[in-house]
Picture 1 (cartoon, rainbow, N blue to C red):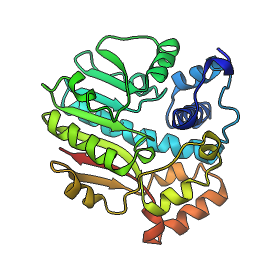
Picture 2 (picture 1 turned 135 degrees about the vertical axis):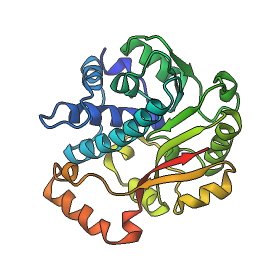
Picture 3 (picture 1 turned 180 degrees about the horizontal axis):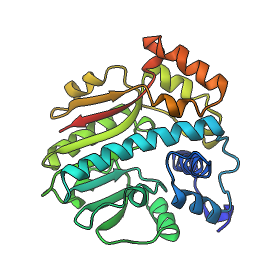
Picture 4 (picture 1 turned 90 degrees about the horizontal axis):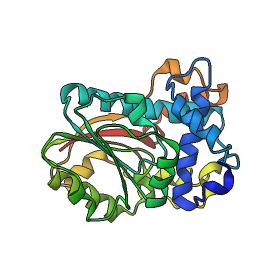
Amino acid sequence: MGDDGIGLTGVRETLLITLRAKAAESQLADTLLHDHFAADAMRRLAQGSRHLDVGHDMAVGIAMRAYMLDRWTRAFIDRHPDATVLHLGCGLDTRIFRIDPPAKVRWFDVDFPDVIELRRRLYPDRSGYAAIGTSITDPALMALIPNDRPAIVIAEGVLPYIAETDVHDLLARVCSHLPSGEIVFDAYSHLGIQLLRFNPAIRATGAELRWGIDDPRGLERRVPGLSLLEEVTNYDPAQIDRMSPGARIAIQVFSIIPLLNRMGRLLRYRF
């Protein structure tokens, strides 16, 4: 499957950034993610994201983000072995294979129809799994998701590309439709969004960054039913040590300046 077989542009093309980063990190001797499905997918895509500038530091950073979201997901499934997992804006992420949930878990991957079609060409099907081809902001989406079990909702690398009102409406639909559970995602402050616009890989896709959040508690006021459980701004020092000297120095500087330290974070809410 070569470059011509991908056919993704704009925000859809950003999924190749995360896939390539996870594949690259998983080929390192000291890999954290061990995402061999991603590495295999990149080989099958004939390195179709080679024009996207994903360096070593970005690969390690994205792997750390994915690893934390995986940990939260595994922990939820451990507490609820028959959970529903709703993966919004799944792209070509192979989280279901990394986590390998028990047979009782129902897992739904959601993304645009052309992305889901590409997933079907790349990955095997499995019991308890369904892929839904639609926009995650489609109000009709929730009617396709059973609401009889605790659920964890995952949104990695997707909400910053959605307009603020659409993010709030999406989260409100999650809270009103699903009986109980958690939602986990990455978010950036407004300053972080401004700086991300200069990221070479994102700029190469032409995707527009739209949503920033400075105060995670503010989301509780905007979306009734959400309650902040955890905010992660700092990562495992052992993983940061894998980065280049320049990146390590920047992270150290950012960690002591609150405005910079909170530019990017992982958030976990209960609903």
